[in-house]
Image (cartoon, rainbow over all chains, first blue to last red; front, side, top):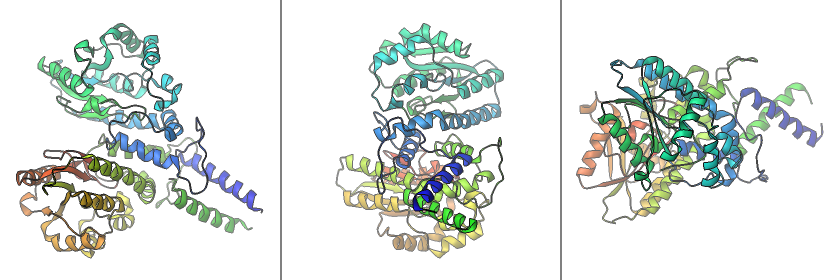
Length: 257
Length: 257
């Protein structure tokens, strides 16, 4: 067997083995990066970068590292859903373990973007977070009202309703987007809620942590108990009145402080 | 070339490629699990499980899911080091960004096991966390004093010393293990420290979160400023007096509350 055909076989077998074992790897770089022997393997670094982001070791980042576009794109189209499923499943297990008062005051806080609704159709067209956000274009996408549900969160939402835990949506979307957000949520399957809290103009200069903490405090001061809180950003889950337990969904595409 | 020698070569080359490129894949299931078309792909679930653990969505788990032994073992021997590198690098970047008083009161808290020292030689012989911990055997391993440094943490330690930030080791190891722990740390390259705090018998019934919080409070009450804190367990990083910024190293092998 010649040297070349040997290598072709090695690569072929390695690929088969990989796809059978379900191990993620870069199969379609959206913008291929050249690489040769001895060069840094982007995928490996990007995997570590994403873990760093998810564990909040890496903070306040602006855009996805350019070399990680292919990796993040691939992740979002594959492993992302599996990862979300495990988070939602833990949340359901936790919710079922609660002893609820049954007085209608137990609530669960849901973030909206990349938590209840998915903007993946938008980000897939815009480099999966490699491009800096274009607020005009993103705003136009939001106004279409066509964001699909993140199915794992919708499943959690349904389980919580069954348990008598009421959903509260708390989003960084502006008050102006109330109507389109309501109809988008309903069309995506989130048909009822106790509150839908959007970011009022009074908060325009405040961070998400401050805005969301402040609104959660109001919720608890109104007599509700936040038994759970789910979001894709650490700023959904840090601060005060975060809830009895928090759940972090993955999002390697953007960071909100 | 015969079939057997071909496979030997494939495996050899795959191993070489793996070590060169460091690309994660399941090359050695310690206890092979059968799988056929349509069955659940363990690797995918285990990847999500590990992310759930690292992000603290999954808490209070006892042992690694049996189906994930091969996955976790592979992870620990490959991607783990890459992931640790990114964490340590962020910690160094952060430390270098600090404006230090230069009064000798800036300290950094290091956990020991799976943070400063690695027990991977032990865990590699005991199913990478699939087996419940055998305290007797693990104790014997600790007493050998042969745990190697986690190289990424050693690098961070050295950078911090250069910056004038003093290390404090805070460990769940018992006070009885002080001598062997000191010599193990020194032999592994951690040659100096401001304090080495081991778990006294007064804390025997308390969780790591409570014990470590209490000891960190004493440290700050003595006039030190904890500018950073690194550990592999969330119980190293939660509670009070956690430090100005915390860093979570990966550890999918065991959970300490």
